[in-house]
Length: 326
Image (cartoon, rainbow, N blue to C red; front, side):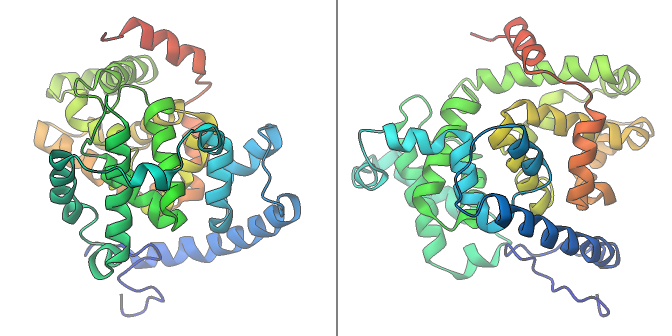
């Protein structure tokens, strides 16, 4: 680290791990900063009004990355969150004033210190944890089916870090949970369990040798991949990579989660096949965040679409009907 231009804390406030490869990161960022500059100029030329219409041009631009200052307005527009906000009979502020369920409040307060404990903004600032509490409590109070579920704190926390806006974070969280990921966060988690079965079949078709090896080692898909889906890769992959994934997720929907999973498994095919027991296999899954192509978020998004093939929404929906839990 002595020769690195980068601190032990990234731009989103997360402490880098002790084994962080600063040399590789320096190499990646020297290229990526030029890419970010080019993309920002293009976005400013085409979307200076921050009015976004879903079309192939915007889709192509989003896949190449949304500049940070465009993310809040773009995520709101393309996800449907802005339309949801406008159609709501109550404002976020009005809903926030009705948070009174003691059990929900206690549950969220217990979880708050566990949310990104290595992030200096959550650790050293009072304002951000308070904003996160407000978002989670308001969502839980107005969502009887979900209430509060562990995992939502990581999603809301990272949205908050990216947008710096409490109301925007609430509406994006609500859109994700109610519209994009139905039944992921209810008590039975039936939607999540269905999608784990869908992933199982997708891997079996795409990588039968890997699938058979994982089966023989004895790792249930729920053990290796539940956190991928329940946290939308937050607290699993590098922050900038997660945000680039979310750029695509908010535009293209939940099939992006499967594209990411397939890409990660294919990128780590050899490491997976070299494992001989459950402990070794779980270590491979845990360390996927350290792969150079995963750290290089620009390359990973390219890999995500290339390695997952021609994955269609109708194929995902057909498999979801096949494995539907209720």
